[in-house]
Image (cartoon, rainbow, N blue to C red; front, side, top):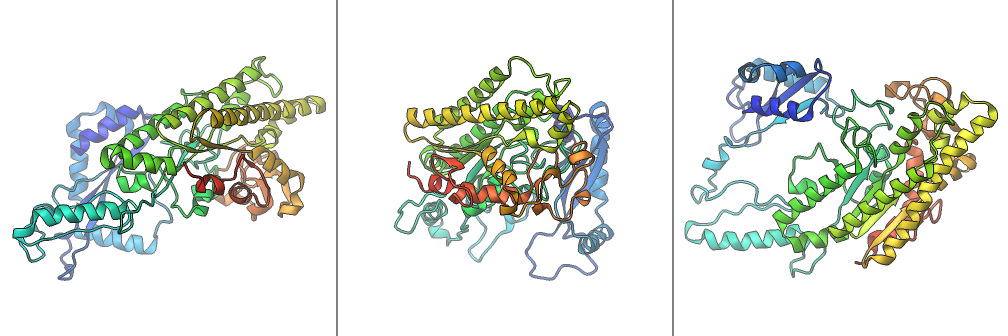
Amino acid sequence: MAAHVWRSWVKALDVKPLDYELRLTFSVNARAKLKNPRLNDGFYGNALCVACTTSTVSRLIDGCLAETAHLVHEARLGVSEDYLRSTIDYIDLHRPKRLEFGGKLTVTQWTRFSIYESADFGWGKPIYAGPSTSLPHHKCVCSCPKEERLKPVEQWHGHVSAMEMGLSSDLTPSPPIAMYVLGDSSVDCGDNTPFYSLFHRNLSLFPCNGSDATLLPQLLAKKMRLPNTIPFYSQNGSIHGILGGVNFGSAEGTILYPGSRSYQSLNQQLRQAFDIIQLLQLQLGEETVDNFIKSSIFYLSFGKEDFIEYFLNNSSGTGFKDSSQNFTHILVNQMTNAVRNLYATNVRKIVCAGVLPLGFAPHVLLKCDSSSNSSRKACLNKINSLVLEYNRRLEENVVVISEELPEAHVIFCDVYQAMMEFMGNPKAYGIKDVKNACCGLGKYGGSSGCVSTEMACQDASTHVWWDLYNPTPAINSLLADSAWSGKPLSSICRPMNVQELLSSSV
């Protein structure tokens, strides 16, 4: 079964190149294998080890199922006591700082967990053993005497469900909230882009310093006292994980370029969000989920990758098409439709982030440098004017939507003007370099992106730009502070800041 799933997974994703080596991992029960010494009596925790096998894409696609099954079988047999001890020693000495998911499929099977048959807390064998529910927060497993088994279990289940959905003992609603994020490299560092390390194209291998936690939406989630939203492709479909917030964004996410290798266009991310909402409704009921979705924040940040594609597909820095204005108009219309579609699924609180001043990004500066002085200025002005046009149209449409749709609370956050303030008055914000990328090669650090964090500057907090197109964590932090409370910059989010949006009633 694992071999068949692995082969089908590779074929469905149409993975390239064919010589790329993929991994399959799965858990193996370690209890019976640990004999010298054995596990202590009374240890009831999980005892398992991860087995791993590898294969190239072409071998999985063109080879036979029996060959793949043999690889899986050999990996399982290879988990011996020596293997287990070696794994323990390795983790102890070289504990990884982050998990690596690239090019890996993990298969898990719980059907053989002995708890399903043998759990006994003194009242006999269980009628049911497993999670009491998939919801987050409190968990409760109830064992009742035989003559009282059915009715008390039903009563406990109702009590626990109410408690887990944020209801007090008197059943007074206090709906939980979460943040759901859709967007491009402004919201994702590549963790949610399949095979990003191979297909990062126009972007850096490391488009942000560290992790998604340094990006604007995650910083806002922290201010809301919410957990970091988990990447869509890292979550396992559990209700617990979904209720904590999901990041559908992709480092290569675009509005108009569905032909991207990542397949993470705006429409694709919307479909994923709608599927998640539908899953919640099936598990928890429509009324409960509707209240939850209405109280939660949906953060949209698109457009940057579309402009990058648009600029780079021109042969020269000034060779823009005559339909530039139409291009921005189409982008804004698609974003407006996305907001309306979200509203139709009971989303009420939406943040629409504008595009940053791409004309001053290191790679664009380098590209426009090839022109004469007058042409260089025209090149930069043309790019920034298009971005400004997009931002202006988007904000206008946000106002229209808020007026047309009852209960809609949609705000526009002007990242462009905020960054222009930081670059125009750098000393006031502790900034020393407004042109050069902290992590990049060539003039302005704009000829090649960040291929290793070791090549980054010593102090990223003094730079505006992290790499080719993305701001540093320090700039993101300033943006988050301003978007949340209006300090240090007031009114970058209009008509209200994010803190006011969060507390608004629907």
